[in-house]
Amino acid sequence: MRPPVGVCAVDTRTERIGIVMGHEGPYIQLRPYGGGREWDAEPVAVRQATPAERLRAATAYANARSRGELP
Image (cartoon, rainbow, N blue to C red; front, top):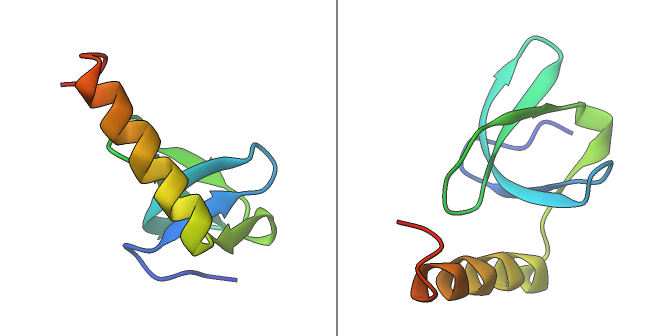
């Protein structure tokens, strides 16, 4: 699967949720929801995030910001 840029996706090998930032060589580049350092994921290990997973990521980000853990 090659999800389009901007889609919220899950790296099933690490269970991390990120936004697809691009496709570089054989990898998909993901950035954590809310920003941070990108990582490369193998296409066979990436799937589109469910609405519940997207909501969980957005809630975790909002909570971290409200606690002052993020800018």
